[in-house]
Image (tube, rainbow, N blue to C red):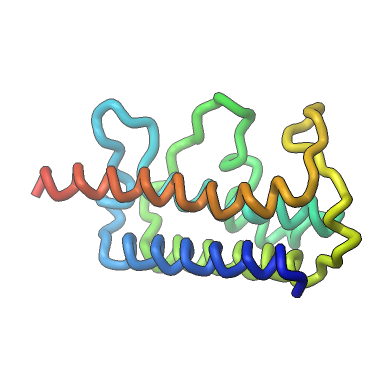
Length: 165
């Protein structure tokens, strides 16, 4: 694996372990809880992280992910247009089901990272449909930042959960 992809992979591994640890013991009700003044539940944020990783893997590999994976992470639902709200997660998502979806999405993005060559670093990809293409390095930096920012939201929601108990 090239150095840039390895760095991204290591940061993503830390982020995945952190999210897994944060949600492992939560009930479906806690995962679905949306605190007052916030827009998302923990389940919604986890699905959004997984779907985003699948989208980036698709961009890097230049092909669609397997349909069962796209359905599992509800890809079209959890990668809305910028500024659009992320739909609520389906009731009944468990920590186990969410972790499984994260792990499947992570396997897809790791496969994409492992396939990268130094020459690929010169490639560009659209960040959004119709948007200005960005270099691959942008996405290698975006993914760890993305998971970290949503982990911060998850930690905030967990603080609300502690107040309700």
